[in-house]
Length: 227
Image (cartoon, rainbow, N blue to C red; front, side):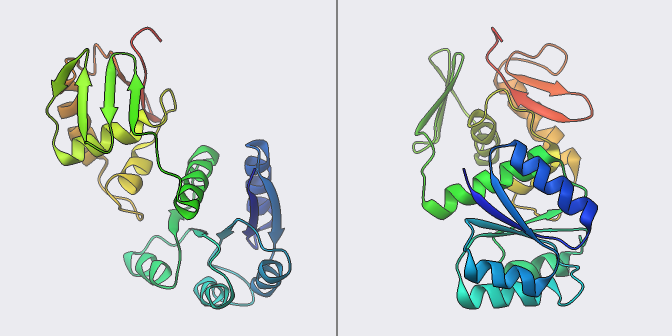
């Protein structure tokens, strides 16, 4: 269970985030403005901060720099600002991740878990197995029913990300962020094309999936054929 501080001035959004993260097993505190948030970081250090940029008393990037002056706590910026320049500014100021509103509770929780894994240096399982599919992360090798599958670097990264969380529906926006490293979004067509190539190499199609199952209007998940 992670101790999370949410710095968000909008009471409705703050309440929704507190409820969503609390329902997913985290202990969550909140602050409605920058200076209250900074005091909370100092007095009761959290494991992670979710930070809005549009705060009433101070710009969120300024608060981020102040936090960085006293703490190395991981920070996820969660904001409606999606300009490329703002993303770069926040990351340069010390943000560990950047998510644009509106975002789903599952996406935020996944980002929290990913940032915390990086923060504590937890290595992923070396070999990920889903049905007859085996993904050897350190060796960057994939086998399907014992036979090697030749993937491009991006196809491997995409498959490995999905294999690390089998059964969970992953949005295209999350894939663009986590696999393509585009925190401000990008073209969904890029994901569609790579999924099509990946399906072909796994011997399936979108119409007759075995491992890669599309959930219309939501995203894609990797499952064992028997599931």
